[in-house]
Picture 1 (cartoon, rainbow, N blue to C red):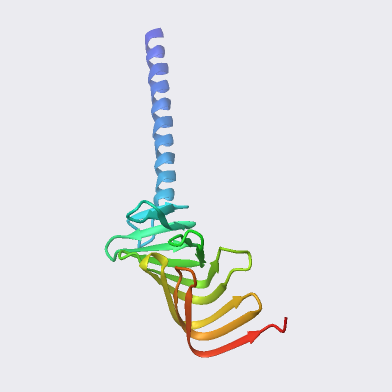
Picture 2 (picture 1 turned 90 degrees about the horizontal axis):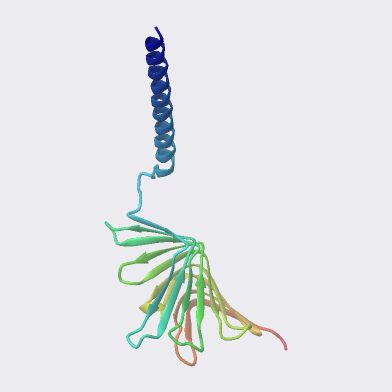
Length: 188
């Protein structure tokens, strides 16, 4: 009888341990599935807070890009960035910072910045500021263009226009507003 009782206690204990293991494994799988649920159009690579610096052939930094997140889609060669911040360093003493709500980065290195786009000259606190809602950046940040309305602020003046091409390198950046241009100067 004592033998039977011991066997029953051991069998019951093993059953309870097996039940606990099975229950815990089920909980882990459920939690894992919840964390790994991906959207229908899931990216091939997802990075939070990417920070990348691109260097020229001489080893000098020419472009720095950061963002809240980056999602890369291999089939179309595009990366979607949220809250991107790109600093153009090709003229080290005249860096430019480009920000927006989102951006699309293409395999050829060009980018489309979208929603609340700001381009700010970093050389001085009163540097040039450009605002638009869409901007294409090419040639490692050296050339920017938009067909959309643009607002350009400099100390003592404000210019507005529709469409713009700009070269953001060299001593004097060359910015051309294409149409519907108006300029307001302060009386100072």
